[in-house]
Length: 249
Image (cartoon, rainbow, N blue to C red):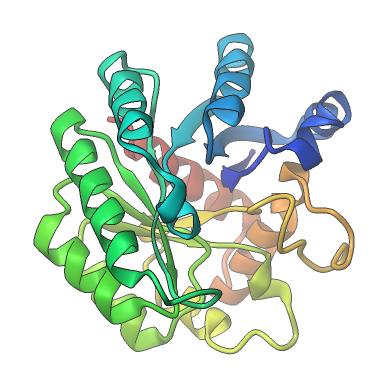
């Protein structure tokens, strides 16, 4: 019934409790595992092989740009060539923690977009304190479908994102009382452009805020979306899953 379009299921923090986390996912019909390194990716491939509900995303995070080698990019391309990657991501720009290597981030971002174009896979975007640069690069280079992961920007930014071939993904932040732009963005976003996610193990939604997040908690994200859209939960869940599956058509 529920769709988690972005979870770090194979990061060490969740993978140590994989059996329990998977057992709690009985109400999910679709899920995408986000991988940021080769170890996480290989773990995800094994899960996908055993369960058709899963898709696998792999890409290099902007904060790791200084450590990504030419060999790493060659291996990423090999995985794409073999058809092992469903979505390239999460990729993008992040100036929040450290903006001292912006050009290195941009270079890596563009290289990964070009790989996605070459192998015709969607891209999942991480965009934090870097909106103008990120959108400028996407407008210039991106040719495949775009997911704006964990969207928390302004309504004006969302409208710019929607002008591209994109889906807007909302996470547990929309359930927080101090969420700034998220509720109005959910209300304004066309339902056929919305995705739901957990970003597990981060951003745990209310009523479990403060605890470790897991894919099962996407239920509370979708319930909040339905509430904000003033729509029934079943139709919202059905549309979100349809939006998710459309990425792979």
